[in-house]
Length: 152
Image 1 (spheres, rainbow, N blue to C red):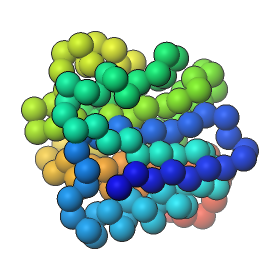
Image 2: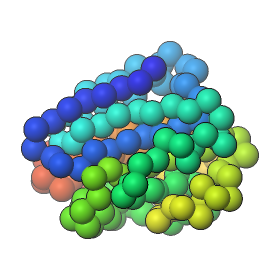
Image 3: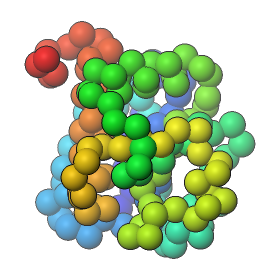
């Protein structure tokens, strides 16, 4: 299932790029819930490729690529919000956040990335990573606007 939410006030598109479709219905519902909420802040889409070797084909020139990777940088939600602001201010047309398959990312795709972000030290299924990340993306936007969703 692909999700697309458009908003008029943002020029930066946000893309969640994944290998394979989300399998669990409850996770699909959660992703859709936060995708709809994100429409207030950014144009959000969920792009799916069938295999990891097709990840690169989903990229466009000028994309800023962030890998969601267990070996990436750990940031608290407020730190992620600040990093999002920096990325949005740097001028990319699209911020692409990629989730690999069970074997991670192909080396050529990994080399193309600008940043690697970990969601935490615990292992999550690839489907759960999608939901957790989309919720954190929504949380980051509410933090940047000082809205009451995040209670720190």
